Image (cartoon, helix red, strand yellow):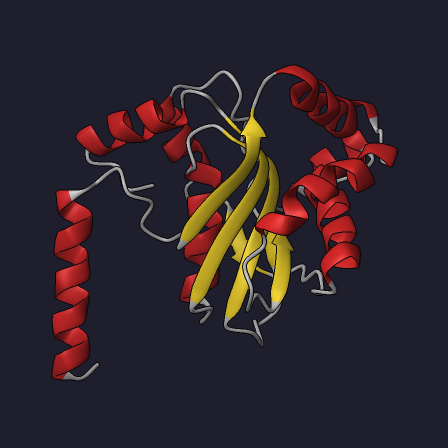
Amino acid sequence: MNLIEQAIAQILGTARRSNPNKLSHLDSLEAAQPYKGAIRDDIIALKYHGRRDLAKKLAKQIAPLVKKGTEGLVPIPMHPAVKRERGLNHAEELAQEVSKLTGIPMLNLLAKCKNNRPQSGLNPFARAKNVKGCFSIRTNPQVKRVTLIDDITVSGTTLEEAAGALKRAGVERVDAVVLAKSEAFEEIRKRLGQNGHNV
């Protein structure tokens, strides 16, 4: 790293410390809707009841959010044991359908290397701790710009952890699109930032 790069890194680090609730690894995060009503029902049906047929319908809501220049769609992975239990990875189902709509390939770059407990029911700080170190790189990225795909974000911690793993592997830009965002998302990010969490 040369002197100019060091100066830029220092400026960016200062900016993140002054706004600690800012997502530090993700370059952007877009959600189609708040997590309520019909979208909530559809997500639950796809995720827990094997309704693969809903993936095509739901993908139409997030495909327009994928930014130009994205070279690959990366679904948030499941631990193999959880995938066997459910019979599918809902994020993969969504990413496959978004790929068909956009022409951007789905890339399974990430693996879930830790079978951590589900995020649901955990407070924001427990969520951050729960996903720490749970993703590994499955295959060396040959692209520099990707978009993470998932169903819902409550606190951003899972997406942040995934983005961090990708950037450490050499990906330069990581965006994320999800079907739904918790209505408490901004407040949760604020609480995390006030307590020194950047993830």
